[in-house]
Amino acid sequence: MSHSAYVLFAATLMTGAAMAGCQRSTTAVSTTAAPVAVASGDTSAARGAQLVLLGGCDDCHTPQLPNGEPDMSRRFSGVPAGSAAPPSIANVVATENLAWSGPWGTSFPRNITPDVQHGIGSWSLQDFIRTMRTGTDPQGHALLPPMPYKEFGRLPDADLTAIYNFMRTVAPSSNAVTGP
Ligand code: HEC
Image 1 (cartoon, rainbow, N blue to C red):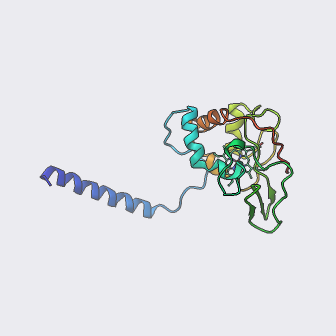
Image 2 (spheres, helix red, strand yellow):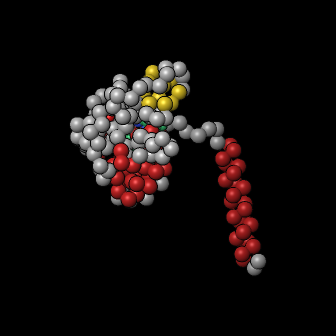
Image 3 (cartoon, helix red, strand yellow):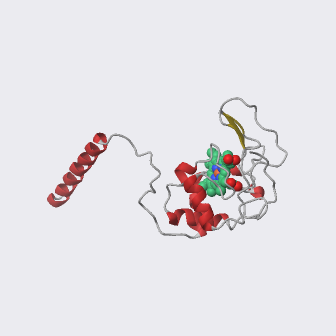
């Protein structure tokens, strides 16, 4: 290693140590809903598709085939109409129909396809961002667990816009999710 490379390496180590020290002296991770600072600025549906993968939206909103794979022909259509609710004991998820039971009651992941009547097709971008930030949808319904709006709501506007733009590209589903 050349001298200058070594100095750079040592400086990097010291910076790392200083940063680690800073992290230790910080009390706790903030629990406020401030948006995270880093935004790519890319609002394309392609970027939204990546964020949707990371957000695990399919895990809760797409019905599963018997082998546990998401049924992409029914992507984001929510709990199939007429499904039985899971047993009303704490923290049970009925994976075959996506519904969850917990101390708060029973939640039915919604149809979030662009279907105007049964999905979120009538939502504007502002409706979507407000719902993700506040946990209350345009109909005034407060979203139940485990919808992770507290986490998604911290994404920058550009990322939420990308997710919205991608969600507009999936096939509309007329599945009518029943639930509170
Ligand atoms: C861990 C499960 C889970 C994950 C992951 C999840 N959701 Fe949800 N989502 C839910 C549940 C449950 C509801 C319904 C809550 C209720 O009925 O109050 C919901 C509701 C919603 C609603 C409100 C629909 C309406 O009509 O009010 C939107 C929009 C939504 N989810 C979008 C998303 C998006 C986009 C992602 C991925 C970035 C995602 N969700 C990931 C569980 C989840």
